[in-house]
Image (tube, rainbow, N blue to C red; front, top):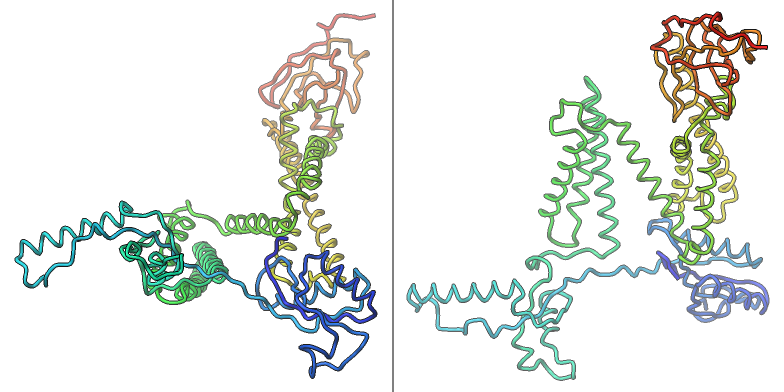
Length: 530
């Protein structure tokens, strides 16, 4: 079973033997090991709780996902309470204690031989200068060959420098260090030895790195905002950016349990400088840097991706392969196929047309579907925040909070509505640009494969037989044409403000330069029909 945290919970189960058996069964289903079990008032609870024949205590190791913070023990109690509701048992979490199993980061070492080192000679002060130089050169060659791994034996050990040296010389058969083992030494796997640096434990160090990065990103955002301001607000935002850097530097100062403070501060300064150069540009007076909106967008995307991952990481690969992945794939594909003409339908409806009146290539329908998906992708921000809140054990998303789900649904519906309004606004803006171009008699912009153009419409039948819907055709002036679709030509009559449609077989479309030209057409050239 995968999990992040382990909390030892003293659970009291009240009832009879069948209730206790049921509690043990649900503990096993949850993957929570039962460390000990005893009656209330007996064992460790003797003298602490009153004896009760109808109550039994279980020391249960509750395992679950989430961060380690001041609410981790409370989160374990919430899960016990939820399990009690689901199983219909009278069960209480009487004590919760975090099981700290953070791993120590031991230094890795490689063992090597020392037989190549020059033998110990007389006191160097008694040697001639030439002899001292020769001895120093021999020692340097030996050290270089050791550092480059030429003398490695293949053995790898971990621990402090003294522990690693003793481990490399240890006789596993039970005796003391052998003569061969005593002729070995160790070198660090990565870089040179730093005896004064003691790394923090793994999770503790990772949390500190995340916090330092968060402070530096906040500093960068404040610096970007300060560049956009003027007057005293520049100094205000700049001061906040400086405080954020100080916060990050203070955390970096204690990055190691002992030592390494100067190196940590130097690395923090280098990262801060890199972020400022990237966000502000090499020249802070130019416009090549980032804007606050762009940075907020990056933060939102990062938070969305991270939150969704925190939300779904609890699923096993079997669950993904069995139903989650096929469901997501089917939903996305079907939505893309179904939404290929959604934006086109909104565009056509705003102009009084039907989607079938627009002959849109499939590639552009797919492009509009991608656009719609990008608009609706903002709806993922709510479940992402939900995933982050669950990871940090926020009280309003606790397993026992009854208002959490209605609050989530209400928020999600609100965001979806806002995203849908964004899709409507996309089509509305395109229609407004189209109408403005029609009024100015200029070329209108295209919209996902819909490319209206100015066209002279020449009837090929007498005026009495010309069938049109939406108004009468004036062949002496140009119209904005949406092309032919399904045997019908769709036009836009700017003077009437409506769409005009007629059979494609009754007209001939001649491209026009713009809406100011006058079409040279005469019904006298139209052959007389029956």
